[in-house]
Each structure stands twice: as C-alpha cells, then as structure tokens.
Amino acid sequence: MKRISINILCILIIGILSISVLLPGYYLGSSFAEGMRMGYRMADSRENADVNINPVEVYFEPSSELIVFPKDTITFDDGRRVPVIVKQATILEEDRDVSAMPAWVSGICTLLSLVCLVLLIVEFVKFIININRGQIFVDANVRRLRRFGLYLLCIAFLGIVSGLAQESLVNSLELTLDGYRVSAYWSLPFSNILIGLLALLIAQVWSRGIMLEEELRLTV
Image (cartoon, rainbow, N blue to C red; front, top):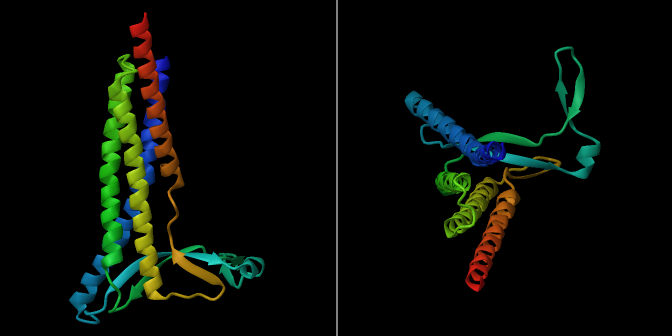
C-alpha cells in the first residue's frame, strides 16, 4: 500500500511539472503558428506582403484609479453592461522594423526547457524505480536528486531569459494604453527555483546520511 501511494504521488508530481512547462510551450507554439499562417495568407494575396505580423502576448497592469473607476464595459446578451478591467491580450502587431530575435530567443528557451523537462522526468522515474527496489540510501539516488534540482534550476533560468526576451519585444513596440502599464506576460518561476533548491538540499542531506551510515558500519 505504501509503495502504491508513493507511485501515485510521483505520477502527480511528474504531471504537474509537465503541465508547468508544456502549457507555455503550447501557447508560444500556437501564437507562432498563427503568425506564420497569417503571413502566408498575406503573401498569397500579394497585399502588404512586406509587413510582418507579430502576435505578442501582453499583460496590462491597471492603475489604482482605474481599479476603482473602470473605463471599459462589457455587454451581456440581455443588454446589461458591467465594468471590466483588461488584464491580458494578444496583440497582432504589424511593423517592418520589429526584430524577430526576441521571439526566436523565447522559442529556443522553450524548446530547451522541454529537453530539460524530459531529462528531469527520466531521472525522477529512475529514482522512484530504485526506491521501489529498496535501494534508497545509495549514491545513485543522491546524483539523481542533484540532477533533478539542476534541471529545475535550468528550466527556471531559461524561463527568465525567455521572459526578458518577451519584455524586450514589448518595449520595442512602445505599446501604450491609457490607465494601464503594458508589459510582457511572464513572471519569475519561483516554484521551479524553490523546488530545485530543495532538491539540492535534500541531496546534500541524503549524501550526509549515507556517509554517516558508512562511518557507523566501519566503527561496528
């Protein structure tokens, strides 16, 4: 029963880690694919073929005054109009001078994050297999825990680089909206950083426990 509960917890952890990386990759890929489709349609029509269509995910931070007195409204089917505050949007920017480098950097970081995620899952599965076999306090598990933490920190670092690239893209577009501060839609990956550091800490404690166990055996 204990072994089954451990495996269920591990499956949940792997699922959450996968979703945390796959969802941003899905959104990025969808935006990129939609931009490519729009570009091909424009090229086929021979109209504005030299204009780049850049789908940009942006985040709107409303001012305190706007939170109290929203200026926008939304209308329901029954005719009711209620205040609304904009938080997030996808902007299709047409600009000949916008550099594609930030988008490429963000895409490469997402792909590298997926690679790190796959390697992380492989190490985690090997760790759980050892646990199920009764091989718990062994050096191989310490190495896997360290790799687990390092992969998470790499994913966090790549997420920060991707976010900064997106921020650079939004800043280059010089977008403004009255009452809002416009920025790229990303946040610091605190959860990955925290879990990665905890994994490294557990690896150090695990390693220390193995050393104490070896010293105890030698003194007996």
